[in-house]
Length: 95
Image (cartoon, rainbow, N blue to C red):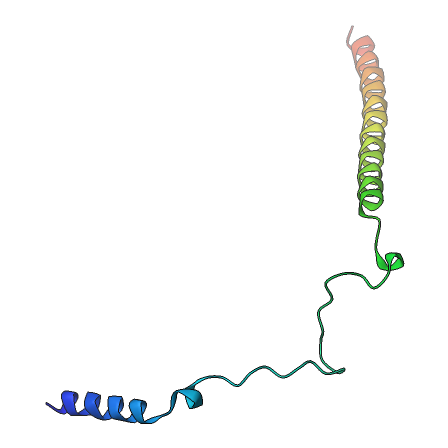
């Protein structure tokens, strides 16, 4: 019974508040101190040539990767030469 009275009172209070009071006020126009989104650049000089930058980035990555693989190949060849020399020394000393 108390629950029914509380619900009735809540509905009466909500019905008494006008609809306009429950709505949010309209947004203010943006001033100079606030952020204003821009849809397009102001002039053509403000744009960045994206295909050129992407191509340069890919070229840099591929050159760096080939340089890294080349350095690994060079170091591995050096280690193989040392291992062959050690193998020859150990092989000749055992006989």
